[in-house]
Length: 155
Image (cartoon, rainbow, N blue to C red; front, side, top):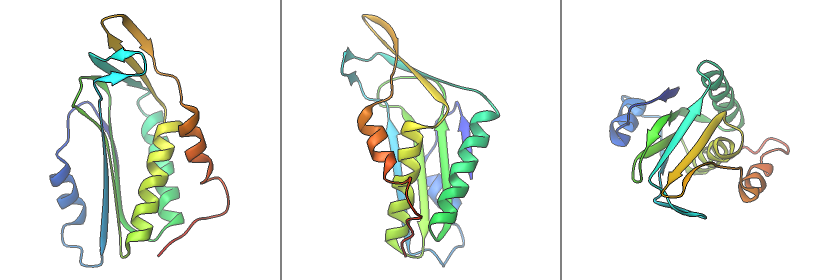
């Protein structure tokens, strides 16, 4: 399940909704990304995330499907926000659920590495010095490269 939305989300409610009635789940991994109040260039007053509706959802659904093919997941969820966000606001939620922890952890890492490097979102940070678009980080690219080899399945 994927959602791209402007509104905030409730992490606990999302996990409860995703796993309701499921007794085959032994591990649930969540990752929540939030807006920091600083970046390498200084303090951040806000961050604006933009995306192309339709294209973004299609691409997130594709990568979620790939995670479900690589690992034995019982459920997964990606929620990514767009619009103007301020420090402390939620940006992204990734939830993976599996019978075993290794699959849930690895799938969550895979999804987050993808979201940091290839998801079709554009970020603009605003500070007292003006606005600037956020460039990709080489460290994020390096992290995502580990998933480009043969299938990495864990149980």
